[in-house]
Length: 298
Ligand SMILES: Nc1ncnc2c1ncn2[C@@H]1O[C@H](COP(=O)(O)OP(=O)(O)OP(=O)(O)O)[C@@H](O)[C@H]1O
Image (cartoon, rainbow, N blue to C red):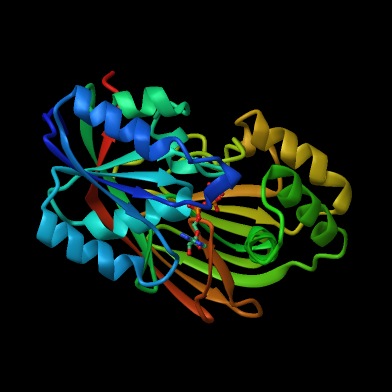
C-alpha cells in the first residue's frame, strides 16, 4: 500500500557527527527550504545520550506530520524507533558513511534531492524486525561483520577505508562460530562465517547480501555464509557484489516469517550498525508493515 500526503509540520533529527559529513550549512538549508514551502519545523540535534526518550516526548508534544532523520543508519534507526507503529512517516536525508536503508528504499543520496522528497513523495509501509526485542530496520548480523562493526565503533577514525582496514586485520585470523538456525521452514546447524538477518537487500557498502529480499512482503531472510576455505573469499565477494550469492556453495538464504538462532560460542551482534550483546538464544520476530517511510514516487 502506498499513499501520498502533504506535510505541514516537520521534525528534523540531525546527528552532528555521523559519517564525518560537514553539516554546518544543514540547519540553514532546511530553514530555507521550509520557508520557501511554508512549512513549520523543529530541529533536534542528537547528543548520543537519551535521544530516544527526548524524541518520543517531542513527537507527543510537537506532533509533526513526519520526522526526517539526517544521519547514518544509527540515526535512522533512532528516528524509526520513535515513529514505529504510529501514523507518522519517517523520511531520510542520507548523511552517514553507509546509508544502507536509504539506498534500499531508493532515496536520493544527495542532500538537495533527498530534501525535495518533503514535497514530492509516496508513503510506503514496510516490515521491520525484532531480535530479542531490539528493533531492526535494515540489517543485523552475527559473526564476522558484527566483530568488525564492534571494532569500527571503537576506532578513532571513521569511513570506508577504516572499515576495510579493520575487516582485513580481523579476517586473517578469524575463526567461525557454531550456530543452530531454526525457521518456520527449515533448520541449519553448523559453523558460519557470518549470519545476516534482513528484510532488505544490500549493506551500505552496496554488497547485495539478499538480492531478492522485498521489504514489505511479510517475509524476511537469514543469509548464511558458511565456513569456507580462505581461498574462496574472493569468489564469495565476487558473487555478493554481482548479486549472485546463490552461485556460491558457501552461501545460503533461508526465507521465513519467524526464526530462532542458537548462538553457541559468540554473543556479539550488530543491529543497523550498533553493537549489541544478544545472548545465546535469539528470537527473531517480524512486524509486518510497522513503519511508514517517505520514498520517491515511482
Ligand atoms: N552529538 C553526538 N556526539 C557523539 N555521538 C553521537 C552524537 N549524536 C549521536 N551520536 C552517536 O552516533 C551514532 C549513530 O551514528 P550513525 O549511524 O547515524 O552515523 P554513522 O555511523 O556515521 O553512519 P552509518 O551508520 O551510515 O555508517 C550512535 O551511536 C549515537 O550514539
